[in-house]
Image (cartoon, rainbow, N blue to C red; front, side, top):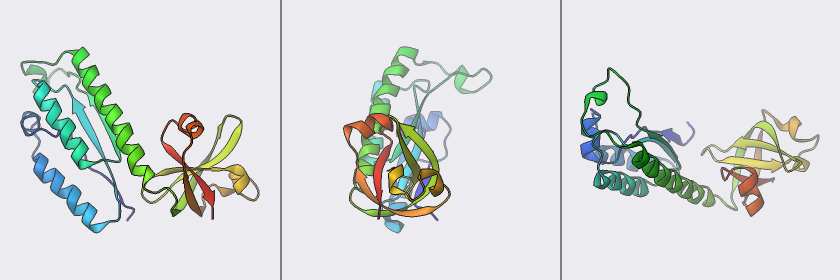
Length: 198
């Protein structure tokens, strides 16, 4: 089992979870994160979050934001609540304004990028097995790209491979994680680290 777990949260606020008719509490969710971390070395825990659910107040949003920081997710998928006819939520009072949803979404997306970068940074200098899945090109250079067991995307310059990057697809290689430069942040959309064949 790879140490990557996707646990859909939706909200870190008890009141919001109740309105969503979720059958778990924020405390129960956090306990599951602790359990996973007690069994695996630096597992990648990812999640889904909805902002702007009907009647979500500023205070409730801030509770969710604080919960996300405490949970220290590797990646978060942030969604703005969208009204759908025929659902219980569609009939709820105090629908949240679209502009407020956009502000909340932007805040959590920024937080997610920060937490993701912090998670990846802890592997800098370490050696990891990487499953090469594809060849990509950036700034005229070719890279082999794949994932570690912890779901960290790694890009390795083609010249590291005998026979080029295409020859490496569908293989597992041991790679030293070299971290990122300003260039790689731009090239790989701040979602990958550079690696070097060991």
